[in-house]
Length: 213
Ligand code: SF4
Ligand code: SF4
Image 1 (cartoon, rainbow, N blue to C red):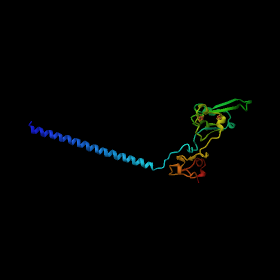
Image 2: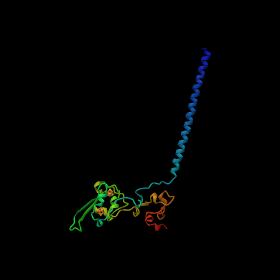
Image 3: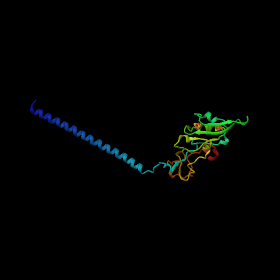
Image 4: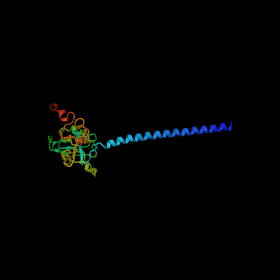
């Protein structure tokens, strides 16, 4: 191979290397511009969200009103209880403690002494409420039962008989309606007037269709 031919080849391979390098620079620049455009689009969406009103419920100053069939703390009326223990049999964990002693006669076979439910164990399935023959059990909308001592969650008949606290009657709280209780087209409960009816028939209207007209 002549010296002139060899020099030409070297120059050619240098050109090829330079071309490859320039192509890499071009690819890198294009990728950088693409990435910058994607980041800008993402930021535009993020800033758009900044302009919307937050839909956060500011607990504990605002609270959602639980739905009518919400299964909160159980309420118990001792004067209606006949100590039949149906609630114990239908409970998945046989949880209610029905404390009774034999009655003085055949007619009064049992005399109830106490009744308790441990809410540290209860799964709030409401089976006991559904099957109680005298309807002395009911579900309330109370869900704030936290305690520093788990034994405080074992409610006796007095604690179970206490009237529940409700979100809508507490003057220190701003009650907000749940999504299913909002009027048609509304997604944020903050601006909905309390007296504006919810979308669709309400549970009372379903039970009594004459109220729909
Ligand atoms: S089912 Fe009702 S009436 Fe019977 S023991 Fe339980 S709470 Fe009392
Ligand atoms: S709500 Fe369910 S788990 Fe709780 S006591 Fe009643 S039946 Fe038992």
